[in-house]
Image (cartoon, rainbow, N blue to C red; front, side):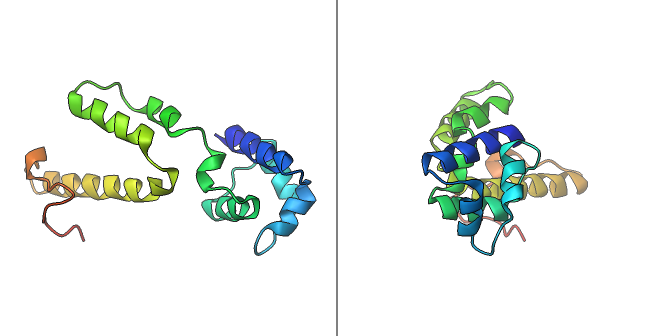
Length: 139
């Protein structure tokens, strides 16, 4: 992943005709140009905060530093049901800006299932509310 981010950063920077120093100067809050070089060489994986700042400086969304969403779904287990295939289809269409929300939703669902298992019972899928339905508080 580090090299994917680095290659994407270098490509975006060079497409705009910027040197590493020029890009570093454009980053809000400042950034050392040698750090940009490390990212581009795959030696350093920047934090999300740095990626956002680099995206702003290059006028691109953060998702531009990552492979397309379709490639991200390839790491999912193979679809064995219609619902998993439906999920994979929707993930391919997902806007990269929505990934943080999706990750949080998955975390909430996993915490809910874990809590149910601790109490000695499972939580069938049909007991989980759909997004548009009222449901239990996940706090």
